[in-house]
Length: 100
Image (cartoon, rainbow, N blue to C red):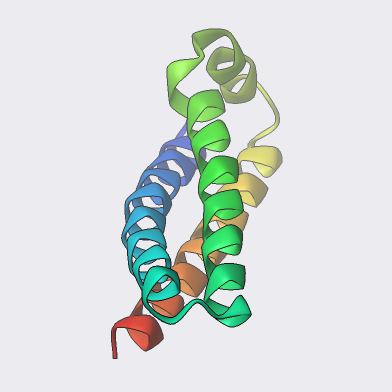
C-alpha cells in the first residue's frame, strides 16, 4: 500500500478505538438518563463505528480491495486519507467534550 493509504488505515484504526470509547460512554449515559438526546448520540456512534469498521476492512483485511486501492491513482489515496484524518479530528473533539 502507498503512504497515503497507510495513513488512512492508521487514522481509521484510531477512529475505531476512539468511537468504541465514545459509544461506551454514550450507551452508559443513555442507560442512566433515558433521554432521546443520549440515544441519538449512541445510534450516531454505532453507525459511525460500523462505517469505520467497514472502511478498515477495505483498507487492511480484505486483500483484494486493499491491492486494488493501492494501485489506484495517488490522488484518490490522498483524498481518502484526508477524509479519514478530518473524521479523526472530529472524533477527538467529540471525545474531548464528552469526557469533560
